[in-house]
Image (cartoon, rainbow, N blue to C red):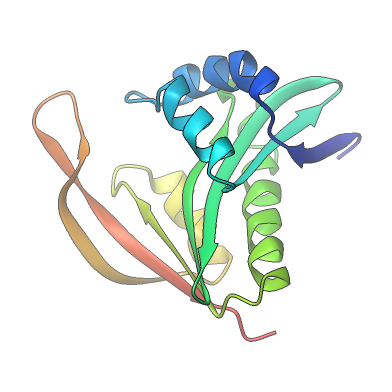
Length: 150
């Protein structure tokens, strides 16, 4: 993979982040949510490739734990390892801040993401019923966790 860069998300990244978020998810986050995450000091990152913002990721780190909140890669760029790059970056940041465990939620219907998390060492530890909005009703979330033993 050639020239990709991960850098902290800034407010002026939000138009590109929102474009990717809206293309990547049926129920995207709002710009206000991303703005709040940046202003609250969350781990907010953008992934660029060839000078274009193609992905983003958000996590929190506190009290010895990290929680991955959002990972998105533009649909045209999926399947090229960019999601893995973003998640590995968040894991590296969690280790840097001495988190012992990382949590995330994933839709059972998002099989590609689930397989990626499994390959990266995440294990299913629970279910949050009716967690995600869906076109009809709500969808459960699988709760995954990974121990950081480094």
